[in-house]
Amino acid sequence: MKDIGPISEKLDFHIRISLSVSQEMGLFFAKFEDALPLYATLNEDSAEISLFLDEEQRKKFDPAFGKFTQTSRGKYDILSLKAEELVFEFKIFRDIMKLPSVIPGGFYLKEGWVYADFRFHHSALKSMSEVIRSIVEAKNRIHLSRLSPSMGLEYTLKEISSRIPITKISFSHSMGPGYLPKDLVEAKPIVEGKLFSSGMESDYDVVLYSSVPSPVSIPVDEGDGIHEAKFTTEYMKTLMKEIRRERLPIASHIGKYGETDITSHFFVPSFIADQFLEVVFKVANSTGLKDLDITEFQEITPDNFD
Image 1 (cartoon, one colour):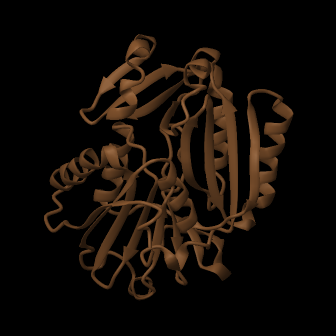
Image 2: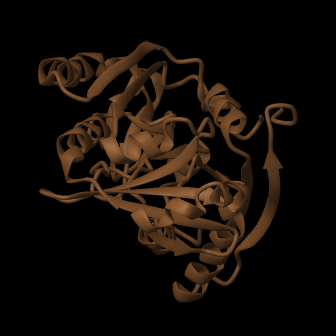
Image 3: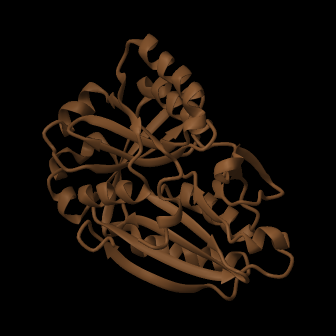
């Protein structure tokens, strides 16, 4: 896919962490083969899991909805469950997210197990090894499932789309004069959002791919043109806050800078695509962004990915 091809393999390592959930929840979902997108909320001493079921999936669970807090969103339902016993495990996810260059690449529940995938640059291997040590020493429900060279973002998105239908939503808007230094604009940087669950975010919002650093970036590997940076536009900062407030699971976010505009590509579960689009327009209105144009809205499958 041309939008992500230039940076698809920049983050060259992949790690998968798995954990078993509570006995009640595990028994309930153990025989359910579908992968359910998951959102987790973490505070210092409490945690909550939210699962997303589309119209077909929720029919299978009607008899047991009383065990969970249920929120209906039209085309899908959110099932929420307090999970205080998973605070330690979710703090491990938070520790991973705070490592330089880490990008989440899938957070879901399948057959009674939670899986969390991350891509990262090899320069973070030493720090990642320390996190792995804490997982091994814990000897509890969290496990290292995989650590290997990454097959890239394109492969990750194809894998996600094989588990659950995803929709690509793209939109563009102008940068405005003086938004970025001229040399950075000329380098046409690409950013990749570090999107994860509430309470597990990194101190930085994006991985920045550019031969020229941003004034608000820190280097990950300058030779590879990889940095971490903060969002600088009011629109994107507000959009990210709204995504977290609405607990919207996002598979990937790519931002591309042109000479005068920014184009954002979001890959989201198809059953939340309409709501995500509503949030895009809502935030544009609240931040006074008047020139936002939707440029693509289509479902992506492994067959039509390219």
